[in-house]
Image (cartoon, rainbow, N blue to C red; front, side, top):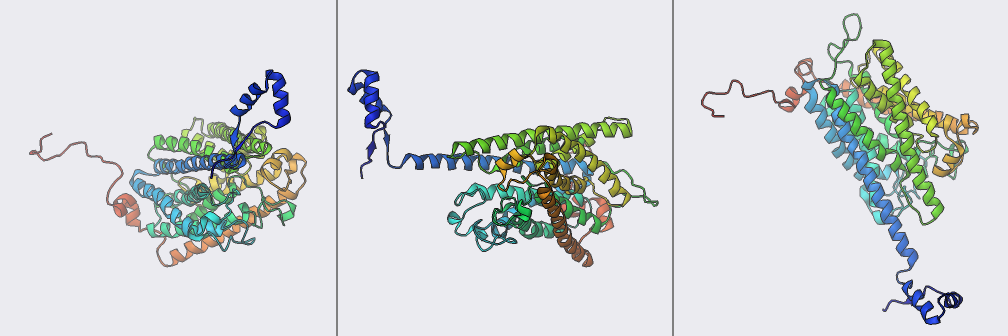
Length: 497
């Protein structure tokens, strides 16, 4: 069938142009230059461009989030002793692989499925193993968008990898695999559905029956991702106990520094870089056929990048100053922790607060982190990377912060129910939702992972033996060391070099 050619100009427009161009022929020639083919319609072609841009945006943002795995690997490796390096690096790789399979088989279906289906608790009955994917409405509002699955998997992998730092250097490898599957296949997807699915009972995207007329705001996952990983890791710390020699006979902590500050800094910078996918990418779309909607999307994404940067910077400077006051030294590791604490603290509200408020998030988050690390040592909780204070406790702060400082204008751009922060004149509806969210998420995570770790401990599968711990996991479990210390000495005489 021949394509129908539709003139760009109406009859009245052609007459008007004839007056401008002096002749009708010249006016018609001008219109012919602007003529378009009507098949497919222009609106359909623009919709295709819109979907292509949004899908590409989400793929790139997901890739940035996945780069955070490299950051976690370097940070964890540098913050522990060299004899356990291969173990923690292997766990980081397996976090990505195991979570991918779990997210494919059941994770997406539990978390979202088809967002037009399901109930307040679980996203059934669609989306398992990506069945009938092209007909599912995904959480971005698109039909069967592949990059939605990819982006959400990157978040699931992040939540799954956080506990590894909490239980490093003494956890049984089988126990690690057990919690990796359990978190990525059940604990985390349920939380995602509650908070991020339009059907979720806690969700700020629920416009049918939102909690307290508002729903919980957790823009990029201070609660969904960081509380999940941090509190699961905390339960692991408690159940497995401290490393050998971490506390002396009087219960006083014995310093066990990591083996590479260089790796810690590299990991921190990679995580910083990846956070620009984590927070700005959580708009899920960046353009819309409706011009006004497009403006809201790219403004929201850009604002999230700004507030993320400022909160991280405030966390760095706060950590630098507080550490100097205590120890009279400019401490590099504390500065790295301060940056990450700032990012965790702003993740839940990155799109809905003013830049000046982001500074408050980072400053207070850094102080909360310092206090929690001190408290953990008093309670003899051994967290080698302080990951549970950073992600678990400061993740709670990040959720609570939105209840205080979310602005009416920005909430209206990023969410649907319009309730905003108590300190910004919005009353207590949103704040109440944030408090309920913190309590419910903490209970869900701690009870489920606590039971898992208790069962593993009861069967003697949670912790390695003292001999293996003393030798190091690399030698005792992985057949060697991450570092080759042979510099050519003591080679047989008959070998020519």
